[in-house]
Length: 93
Image (cartoon, rainbow, N blue to C red; front, side):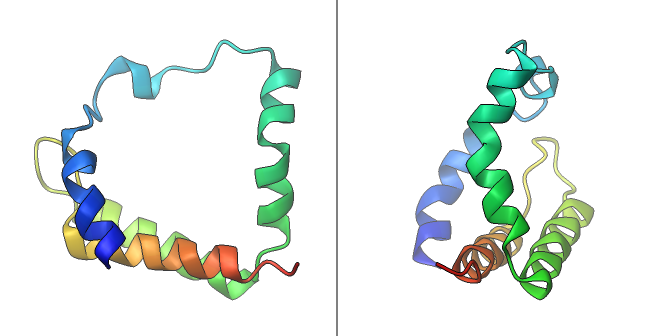
């Protein structure tokens, strides 16, 4: 909760509708894959229930966005961060 509260002002300052966030990276696909390989492998090892709860938290937050800046509520942001924490913790060592 404290991480969410401390980082929420930063989240609100991001220009979410900027072209920068909607453009496709121009990196070589092989370099891009190499760069995200660890994340993909980690995601494949996550508990499926934790993943589902993470997806659900994101979907709820996206459905509740109703402001011009495209930012979810602090409560939804806290739920997303909690879900991500559970997802990461579910990965066996």
